[in-house]
Amino acid sequence: MNNIFAVASIVIKELYRRKDFYVLFILTALICLVMATVNIFNDKHIIRYLKEICLLLIWVASLVIAISTTARQIPAERENRTLLPLLAKPLSRTQLILGKFFGCWIACGLALICFYGFFGALSGSREHLWPLMNYMQAAFLHWIMLGVVVAGVLLGSLVFAAPSSNSTISFVVVAGILLVGRHLDKVALTMQEPSRSIVYSVYYAIPHLELFDLRDLIIHNWPLVPWKIFSLAILYALAYATALLIATCVMFRRKAVN
Amino acid sequence: MARDFEPFESAMSAILKTEKLRVEFSSREFRQATKVALTGLDLEVNAGEIFGFLGPNGAGKTTTMNVLLGFVPPTSGAAYLFGIDVRQPIARQRIGYLPELTYYYKFLTAEELLRFYAKIFSLAPGETDKRIDQLLKLVELEHARKRPIKSYSKGMQQRVGLAQALINNPDLLILDEPTSGLDPLGRMKVREIIQRLKNEGKTVFFSSHELGEVETVCDRVAIIHQGELKAVGRVNEITGKHASLEKAFLEIIGYPTPSTP
Image 1 (cartoon, rainbow over the protein chains, first blue to last red):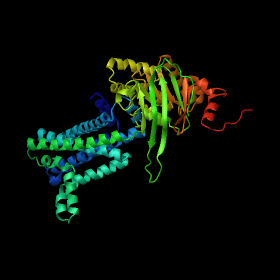
Image 2 (image 1 turned 90 degrees about the vertical axis):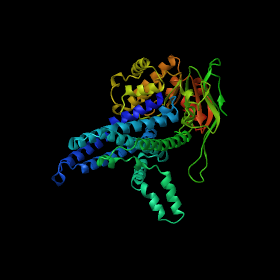
Image 3 (image 1 turned 180 degrees about the horizontal axis):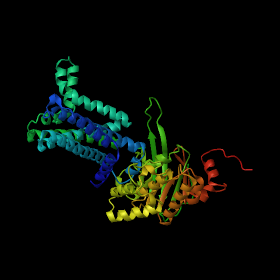
Image 4 (image 1 turned 30 degrees about the vertical axis):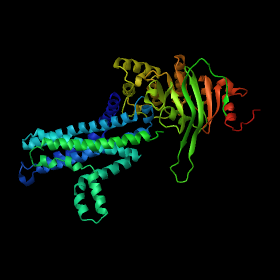
């Protein structure tokens, strides 16, 4: 565990010493603050649009941070040759992968705390409502979802050597899952065999990241998600993240490092 | 066949050993032949000696080091560090490694980098602080310990690399072309550090193209060419009747040397 957290601490340090997070946070804050000055229908109490824009920006920014941070980890270690002195120490390849995973995931969690803190302050100042449990539930499921994304991108970084190609492909896949994933079963119904079976297989194989999206519940001030469903969603994400991490470890153990 | 010279000291125990080490790289290109990087390499490095590993580019020096460090699995044969198979991470507990031309984490300072590597060796906090102070003094980077590595010159980066290789006070140091790309002053400093490590009783296994440097600091050398061990022995034995190690090296690898007037 000591080695895993040593590697993770370097990833976290990298995130807060790079400009990516600050740029995205300032950009999100600026857009939201500008939007907050607009009075829709001259009614100061209409803030639904503001919450929607802010949460959308938070989702986009968090995915950018998760994918770009994770995608460069192993390729940058290879390119700068820091992988060599690292693996020459009593650190196993599995520990390295787990360290990178936890580092990226915790870094994403820290970024989410800042983003949701800003969102809570902004919406609370306009709405005078503080549904903290709802925010915490949304932020936590969001973070759990990012765990699946981080594990997937880590696997991708072993397949695609260049961070840019890995980032691009990961963005396309994650956006595809979020936007189209939930409709694949309906699409399959309109198809002939064997396409129908293929699309159905894809529908059941992909992690349904949209299940972790509680934006609508926050925007419309709906009640909390039942804790049983909340727990099942966490287990669902953990199963996918574990499977992806096992695949990454197996692949990395077989890879020659030179 | 390798030319065998006298063993350095028969009483010394081998802490680095390879047995009939063979490494093949299969080509990703269609119908391309498999590349043989090492062919049955037998090598022994004894405790306390400085061992130079020589060979032209592409001879198999870095591949040998990669096998020793567990980066590349051998196709056949075996390699041991302190009698432990190199495929086990524990074999690397007592070694330090400096790769050729490494660009360490730019966002860290030298002190943070060393602290990170110390954590991997599970050094106690007090011991870590002491060790970092000693090493930064040894590599003459005390003044720059709080500066990010991205602001370091190439020589400074190489010295911080040497410091990370020494963080666990290793018994065996594996250095891959430690003076590559350094100016004469940088080379001299690295050479001084190697010499100092020798005086402390450390074993150093290093590859280099600087034959003059090898002649100065090494107890024994091995010459490898096209994956095959061509010669191994003490520097003066290898040099033999030749005027310099360079001339002997060229003859051993089969390069026609110009006759001296």
